[in-house]
Length: 133
Image 1: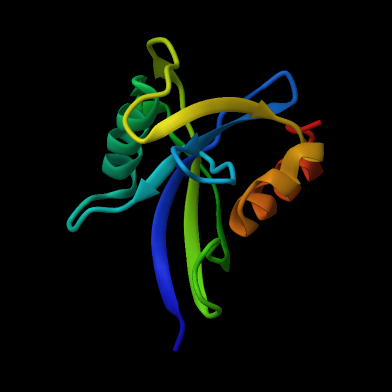
Image 2: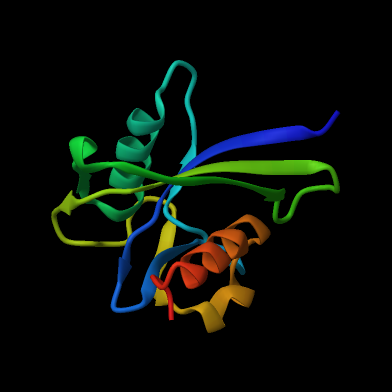
């Protein structure tokens, strides 16, 4: 039986690009978000993680499920999977890399090779639906 890492991610696109983050000391970009804490709902996790990483406030009432994606976890042994529940949502504030985040970037479909396997699935979905150029 595979080990599954439960994550929630924020999908924010502008002008055909998707917001992505790179943690300190990491070589790949990840969609903003993170692991659920015990007892947290998807939206609790989304609000907490995005607030910690990018210093903005997600508007929970605006959140809409984009999809659930599952793939091999980047940097983990074979058989460790990430199941990432993805939401779009409005936010308030000014995007700023904080906490463990070294930088944020706006990535296109052509940049998908710089991201984790599960993020690439999201990139494919966004590209297929016309949200990512």
